[in-house]
Image 1 (tube, rainbow, N blue to C red):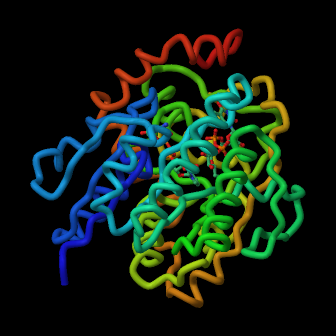
Image 2: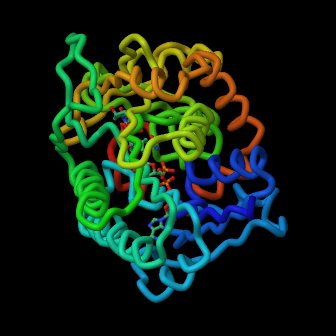
Length: 342
Ligand code: NAD
Ligand code: DAU
């Protein structure tokens, strides 16, 4: 079999980098090209250990750059498309870049993938496209749930999902899509709640909890997500969508924060309620039975175990996250202005 070439977009970000490390460890015969613009969220430090491998290439560039994307795509068998603007709070303050990257950037990749006859375009999406479930209900998102995005971020991701399907139906692009719940783990930018909480505590600060803290997210350890993507790429069906999730019971943000405080030996009270996120989705819960039945995937890392691993990793790697907090000080100061969490 000839060497397979994967184009990973957004491979310097949290999940993309974890995926590249996972993929190259398990598929040493394949080639990986990582196309990443290195926005504030991209960090090549994460990929230091593989940067000199002969089968790994990094290209700094924009997924919206037609000329560059076409040049790269000519040698590509499989696209794994992670690149996106991903932080909901930033999308509320500055939506434009979310539309440019997540919608137009995805469209540029789709056109090039079609032109160069890639064998598979795998689009990484989110459970947020399905909107918000009621607190206390037992409903879960499934592959049949209608789209109901409620933030500029989720609306832009929903639009990109629609474009991917449109390219499959109209032009026959061999695509797959996965919609995953909230990831956490090593190398996550410390603006997202779990690394924010851990690094705040390490720096002697408190944890900011939006609203009443009762919102529910469905947490998945990032390595479990990477394994699900691997299964979809190797055994998944073209033109199929797979939902990926982690938890079998609801965990509120308050419970999550209190677990982190306990695991880090801090008092249960070291958090503050702060102004809520506008349009804050109440509850996400993913029914992952389809990917379980069709591809045999299930999560393997419990929340408590995954949190412990994540805490241990951040404790051991201040050199990775401290510069990010310093460089993005202005963002943290303006976003949490007036709270004790900066
Ligand atoms: P991230 O913000 O950590 O990383 C995004 C990466 O994309 C960064 O390296 C950034 O430099 C790069 N990028 C941004 N704009 C680009 C552009 N125009 N061209 C090239 N590269 C660009 O994101 P993440 O949390 O790793 O999420 C990756 C993907 O997974 C996204 O598509 C996101 O919607 C999806 N997703 C994330 C989660 C989660 O919990 N983090 C859950 C489900 C789905
Ligand atoms: O569901 C998947 C999505 O998960 C991904 O598509 C997004 O890219 C990813 O950012 C994530 O979105 P969330 O908005 O759920 O993640 P975040 O870490 O920003 O927030 C998680 C929960 O914690 C949410 O209910 C808001 C709350 N929160 C967040 C921050 C940053 C706080 O209470 N305080 C905070 O300071």
